[in-house]
Amino acid sequence: MLNVREILKTFNLGTINQKIALNKLSLELFPNDFVTVIGSNGAGKSTLLNAIAGNFFVDSGKIAIENADITRLPAHKRADMISRVFQDPLSGTAASMTIEENLIMAYRRGKTRRLRPAIGAKERDIFRAKLEKLGLGLENRLTHRVSLLSGGQRQALTLLMATLQKPKLLLLDEHTAALDPKTAEKVLELTCNVTEQEHLTTLMITHNLDHALSFGNRTIMMHEGRVILDIKGTERNNMTISNLLEMFEKASGAHMNTDRMILA
Ligand SMILES: Nc1ncnc2c1ncn2[C@@H]1O[C@H](COP(=O)(O)OP(=O)(O)O)[C@@H](O)[C@H]1O
Ligand SMILES: [Mg+2]
View 1 (tube, helix red, strand yellow):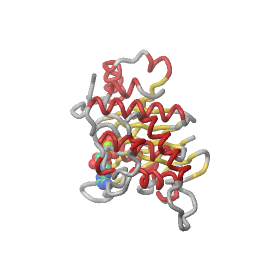
View 2: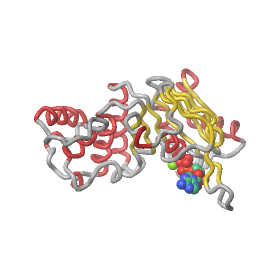
View 3: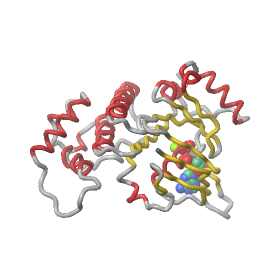
């Protein structure tokens, strides 16, 4: 499904700030994989997602989706295949536009860019049905501006927009980290529902080690620009957070910097 082979990304090459953010990292995702990604601050997690989305080209290595080489494909040409949700609830939606205006943009993504007719009754019905499933009462607020919504509501809407046209790959970068714990759980539950219903292939960065083990089918741990652990199956089912930290220390020879992490 996704094949990342030995990708290298160095920032500020040849300067005092030179930093190898991805150090010949390899990763393969299989269809329907829901992989949680953990690692200390600065391990290269966001850079990995940026490389896959095409925010920059890697220095070397290869990235392929369904066997198509996308290594040199610009970000806007990957956008039909790859959806993203970031940490900041303000970044995924257009505040001054209404809920339905936001949704129609996502709904028509990748479709012809000629002059578009107004939002039709059929589209509104689809939006209402999808919003109803979120259980946030947004189905009755189609014409409300998004700026009126809470962070959690906006993040749920962003998630809906990201999956309205089924992407080949869903990339989540700590998308619940800015929400209060209860809202975060709700958005995570929605994440699970939508990935299951739509059979998505997902990479989810989280700093919550409990979430890392309880969501998805696979957990990878990153350190210094590489994947140092890839845990799945019964090994993962039986794993506790302290096991995980122990494994990290063995594999990396370092202590995990857990300052920003939630361990319980
Ligand atoms: N645009 C950039 N310019 C320079 N350095 C960067 C840039 N993006 C990330 N880095 C550096 O690359 C390393 C990995 O960063 P990042 O992928 O954001 O880590 P993580 O998401 O795991 O916390 C860090 O040392 C970070 O400072
Ligand atoms: Mg990050």
